[in-house]
Picture (cartoon, rainbow, N blue to C red):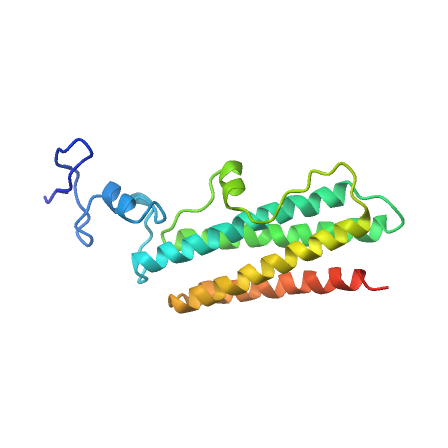
Length: 198
């Protein structure tokens, strides 16, 4: 049986069994992919190139991290709301948080279907998220609406850019999934925007 012949860091030859298609062992495949596609046991077979999988993975993982951040912020506001709009906003924030949360598993599983690796920890989320946490002790309901509106607009912009990348890489299914998620993001933006109008 064939064996990998890449050099290890100590200069000796790798003697692991190779994958027939790539002619490399799983550890060398993982290193050469920049750690974006999974090690051999996690590399789902796809007709997309390794470079395309890497680009799509690098595009989706920050969206997943931002979805986690926005989910927590929406729940934070749901829990810490006060004032005359309490009931309406309390229900709205909970509904929006649930919608955001449902997108996380969809996108993470899409990354895995392509053979990429997705988020593994709170620390990983923190390194990739672009939506800022909100640790303020007291936030007025008006500020909550404005902050969520701005965050959803930022998320929509990033989702739209991700659709373009997926389309460019020939990954129509991921682009279609993102279009559906973007439509829901735009619905949240609409609702939040209308609440800012007098």
